[in-house]
Length: 271
Image (cartoon, rainbow, N blue to C red):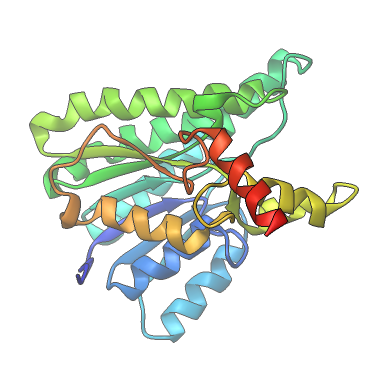
């Protein structure tokens, strides 16, 4: 199976992450498939990613953008429309589990929504006219926290839950225009951010082994490559009749009976 994204303009918010992050991996993969990834991020790292892709003969554009600012989000879309005259795919990828819980302030909660949710709406709102012209699609990145809760992260949980609801709302809104909208739900994924979080714990190695043991398929976390590959399938013509879906990429972590994990882990430890 060969996926062709040749000449498609693909917006990827949060695409200037560290090497191995979901956003950075997505940017490089869609560029390799012939698309023009447009990185929307405030991190100047985006300049390095843009330069490296262009130097290798691929296409890329980085637009420094403050994703918590409505004006900055709208300005980024204007640049894309003027430069390319088309938008084929919007991948809303920003997400920071910022730990804003019930003990946080009203302002902290609103800031969390701006970072993790409101820019999803803004980019969809300002790109929808061009997506209708191209019969394109939207992919919203969500989290297991939307389905399971986590504790101590009200802002992030509210945002990721709302993203799932908006995915189906927009799928209904845009079906008549031939625009598909889907979401990707991510659980335990081995990314630089996850590794940084583990390193703050007293015994990162033991903690990682504990988490790995609870993932039924392969006893390991999902890789950024696996998430990006599923995302690319969902935005490609190979999923041309798929819309309004929540696709979970997690090795069975959320939905399979936890007794499977515990039983198998025990068997492996004694054999």
